[in-house]
Length: 351
Ligand code: AOF
Ligand code: ZN
Image 1 (cartoon, rainbow, N blue to C red):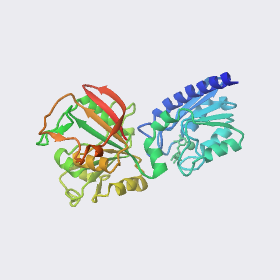
Image 2 (cartoon, rainbow, N blue to C red):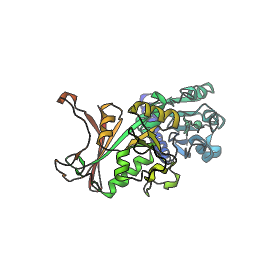
Image 3 (cartoon, protein in one colour):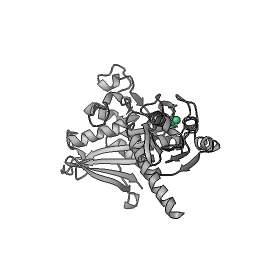
Image 4 (cartoon, rainbow, N blue to C red):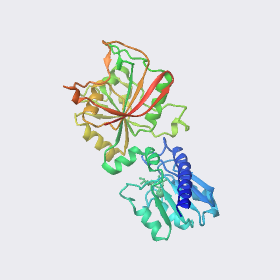
């Protein structure tokens, strides 16, 4: 009956929403693994829940099954990603759900990891379990944009972050730029860093500012020590920093820093996925690098923190980019806007 189906659909969305909330607990700590949540429901009541906390530790389903104890028999499991079918660092979750006596599994979206890719669903169905795929897919996928893009295309999800004035300037002509945006906006940048496997910057930025490109925040809901340290990648085409291992710049002495000495940014991004399992990449650099990434269409998301101030037309522009006509402009869709401290945060998707 249609009304019954509607009621079930609404119930499925509700419990999936709670599974997504579970998944969020792992947002900053699971890299390179995806953040996944699971809720187990028996007679419309939650009997167990869990999330994947960290690569190497059990998956979301295992924590939820353990939490539910004997109440898994005949229950429905809501999982934000297709349960795995492979033995990786942990045994397959599809088998764990079968062994636990789960009767129905609701999944937000399939796992594009070639080791899984539909096999999790097939294993469940072969065991006679009813499987429903595609509940709240978009919000579940929003948690793992890097993992999903990398599995599908072998390229990372690239976020470009910029801090500007109202007139789109990032620094005075002298380079002086501390601080245009407020402390609250700079704190918000920590959430972007904490989600990233790598932070790309330029040798110029290192020489000018020697920024501490690490994660240090009290607002992540987990301690900074639990967040895997993002790898710092310095674009150093002219080998201004990487020729000398005893460089005076602090950052260069960090073992995990990589230097990239060519112009080929696509090759760098591919390399970050295949060699370093960096699926979410944050670009924090100057106008030149921002222009290169944008004009080569390598940006998936542009995040602009805009301070309510005017720096004037001798100040530095946000992006080095010289279109020959209006037709060559770069255009974006505004995905979200919010006020952070005194500033505006715009999240934009290139069109
Ligand atoms: C699930 N539930 O909670 C997660 C899944 O190295 P492993 O064994 O941890 O496997 C990692 C892979 O498992 C990861 O690449 C992704 O395909 C899947 N993640 N699967 O059933 C979970 N985190
Ligand atoms: Zn699993």
